[in-house]
Length: 253
Image 1 (cartoon, rainbow, N blue to C red):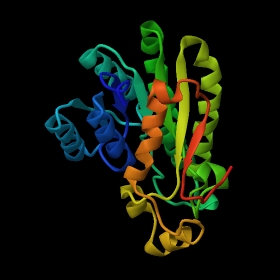
Image 2 (cartoon, rainbow, N blue to C red; image 1 turned 135 degrees about the vertical axis):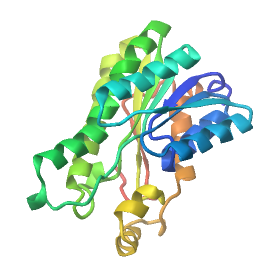
Image 3 (tube, rainbow, N blue to C red; image 1 turned 120 degrees about the horizontal axis):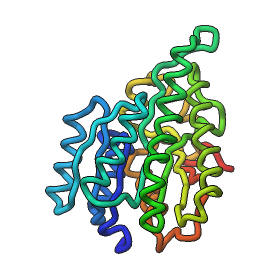
Image 4 (tube, rainbow, N blue to C red; image 1 turned 180 degrees about the vertical axis):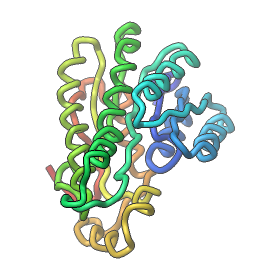
């Protein structure tokens, strides 16, 4: 994509899984990449090294998704490094753990909602003034098929937090259209990443697979095309407020 070449993109949660795959592909296409991480420093550095080895530009930036000041600082660090920010991919987030409703306390509720909702919202809040000043930009949220069907066992709060992300996508698309800032989202289904390695048992994954018409789980690389499409003004310049489903047919809107 020639129109991605030279753009500056910050990918939150860019050290592993879908975020790492997106960062690598954007870098391959010539974008300058900020690879955000929280605790996976070595993995983030590996992603950045791979981008640089392929002739691209990349750096890593650490920020705790539960700390608004740090998330905003990650945006500012990207602008300081490359002079602008064209694409913000709000990928960072986590299920945290599977907890039934009766075992939920305030601390867990806040952690899930803040990690998946507030962190993305505040990173966007930091990026928008820069995008507005430079004449436009592109925000890509990462929601989930869980926002559509309510989530798996013990994951209702996670699903609800992704429901917030989906709603924010649509609302911000309307709010920011006048500034030439497009806002869209990708909604992955069950993807074989460290996320499910950590939070889902093999039995649960087999159960999920049975609900997918394509009969298999997806890979992080199979999600990348949706992000490339949304990041390209040539391919999706008239697309905003949309959620692209990448789920093997598990949910069909």
